[in-house]
Image 1 (cartoon, rainbow, N blue to C red):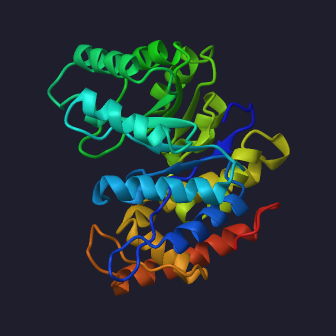
Image 2 (image 1 turned 180 degrees about the horizontal axis):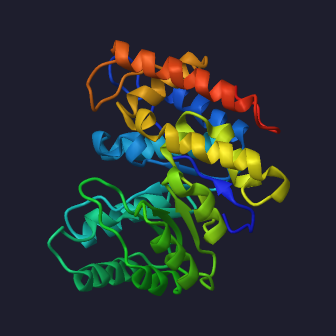
Image 3 (image 1 turned 180 degrees about the vertical axis):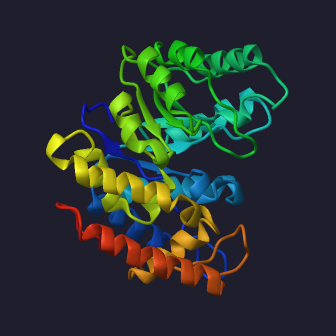
Length: 312
C-alpha cells in the first residue's frame, strides 16, 4: 500500500450460508475474485462485511481466512477497535494485529460519541496510540454507529506520527479530500483511500492513494481499471465514461446493499448465498433482481466502449 501506483482496496463482503453461519469457502472464493481483478489490498471485517453482525470470534476467523487465502500476495487491513472503552478497544486491536494484518483500522464513530468534541476525539486517539505500542493503525469514517469525519488537520497530525498508514474517507467532499491529501502529503507510509465514486477521478488526481468503495463489490475490474488509467491523456474519453457510469449508477448500487451486491456476484457465477444477517434471510425481491439485470446490461454496454478491461 506504500507504492506510488493507485490501488483498489475492496471493502469485503462476508458470504453466509443459508442457515446464517459464515461461509468460509465462499469467503475464500470471493477473496480470489478480488485478487484476480487486480486489487492491491484487502479490507476485511468492515461495514460491507456486516462486522457488527459478527461475534468477536467470527471477526477473527473471517480475518484469518482472508489472510490465509491472500497468502501474502497483497496487504490486508481489518477493523478492530471494538469495545466499550479505549482500553477494551486497544486489547481487541492487539488481537486483530496478532492475526498478521498490516494495519488495524479504527472506526472513528467508536472513538467518541456524537456529542463529544474533536478535542475529546483527539485525546482518545492519542490514548489509543499509546495503548497499542507500535501497531500500525488506520481510520475509517464508518457511517455506523454514526459518521464521524476527521478534520484534515487532525488526520495530518496523526498521519505524521508514522503510525497511521491508512484512511478510508467517506466525507463525500472533494475539497475536503484534497485538503487531507495536501496536509498528509509528507506523512510516511500514509495513504487515503476514497469511498465516494462520484468524485473518484478528481480524488485520485488530488493525491488519494486509491479507492475503497462498495462499487468494487459489483465491478472490481472496472475500479481497478480506473485506478490505472485515471490520469492518462489518451484515455480521457474512456475515463470520463467510467466516471459518469459510477455517478449514474450510485443509487442503484447502494439500494438493498449488501444483498444486492451478493446477488449480483451470484448472477455472475460466484457460488455464494445472498443471505445477509442484516435481513436475516436469503430472499431476493423482484426489485433487486430487476435492478441488477439492468445494471449488468448497462455495465456490458460501457465495457464495449472502453479498452483494456474485461468484465467477468
